[in-house]
Length: 212
Image (cartoon, rainbow, N blue to C red):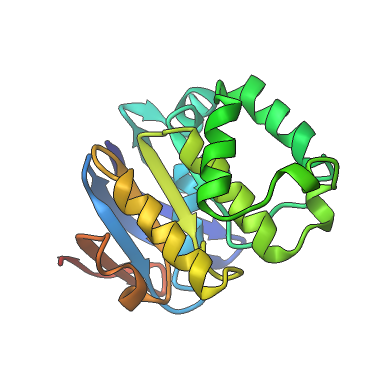
């Protein structure tokens, strides 16, 4: 369970999140929507423990997202909108995540194939130098291989072609039971088959929170 209690986040004089309270439970598949600057990314980064809330608290399975961040992150898979500038080769990246997150290499390979990412000829290539679509497919494969109870995707299909998007949503549908899934998205029509809750944010507040 994710429990966000009266969370406020300020950056200097700018109020990014304004007294937000939300609870996410197992089998909540959530579309998190709103215009740029609404507070969506700030909310996600509070859940991930990237930011300290100015006020309020974020609990993941009862653990404070800041104080117990390493333990909390064991339960979460996250794919950002912009892939990070990782300089490791794909082979090195897989070895690293397998060792650090206890992921089976064959699971990453399986989901990479499902995303139609041809790993074998690209293993020695730097992740940083891959195309945007290939990077996103690799990060999605890792996120699914981790089999986390909580998965968070920030505009995950931004760099994917239509076929890759279809593969992504198919895999999510096949692997969604018993999880909490949060999708920061501007495309509700794309994910309407896999979400059951829609939250709309604006100016740092939750404007609406509806089951769909």
